[in-house]
Length: 84
Image 1: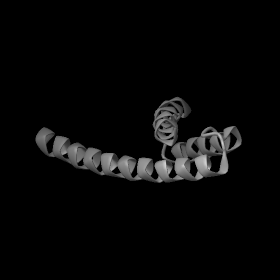
Image 2: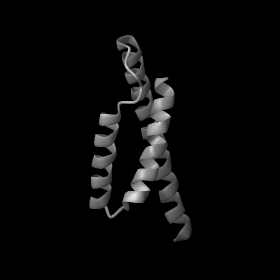
Image 3: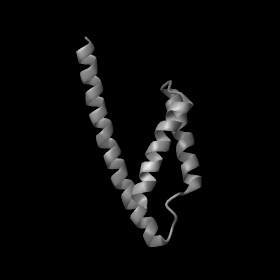
Image 4: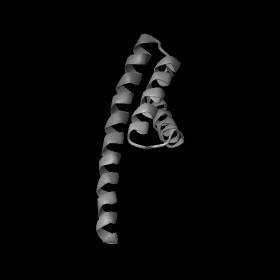
């Protein structure tokens, strides 16, 4: 039982990593576009919309605001890093 649950987590983790890699590739493309247009990597208005919507989605899945905020702050930091 424990091993099968751990295998499930391993599979989910691999999918998450693949999705995060894809997300960062898109963020990199966004960064290239922003550089061409002379825009700052951080769009504070967009960031607030993103974090608020992700918290709302998380609540629907019974995930705490703190958990979603911490996870998305790291994801956002990674996105900003590849945009620079």
